[in-house]
Image (cartoon, rainbow, N blue to C red; front, side, top):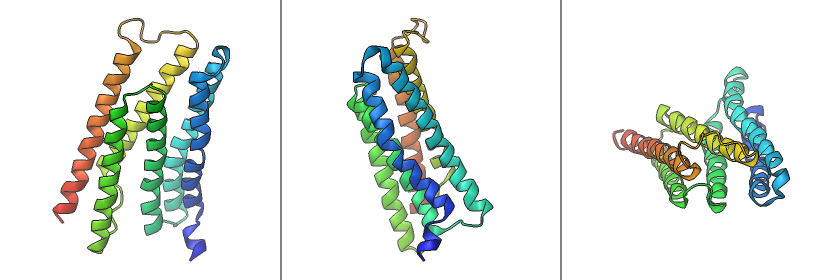
Length: 196
């Protein structure tokens, strides 16, 4: 049983979560570290975030390729995705880079979907990711890269927004879009469960 749970794909999924403390440390020093070194911390953050996103793609691909698709993996992958993205958004919020209210949106959406999955399991249905969940994941991933990318260029004293809009306003607009997609995804899951 243990061997069936710890497949290569599931190990890669868990590896994604194990990278998060390192990402958070990089975020912290990207803001509070020596000014001349901040760009290095943001560079490492972008590198680690890229690995996280690649493992999100690779784990599912390997599970199908190696015939290791399982109910456990179908539940583990979205759980790890939620842990990774929630940790990232919470850290960015604590550093006053994104608005704190957005973290609540992401947290309650994922908590609600987790509860809906339990309801589905009670009906004997394993509720794997829906297309709306994948779109939400892409939107959140893109949002994270945009925001961390802006911080990276800011640390190099490069204004990639060309003074057309303040960094704070731009980040707010990005988070409004990501939050809207996140809420829509949660409603889509709720509709699917309650229409079963």
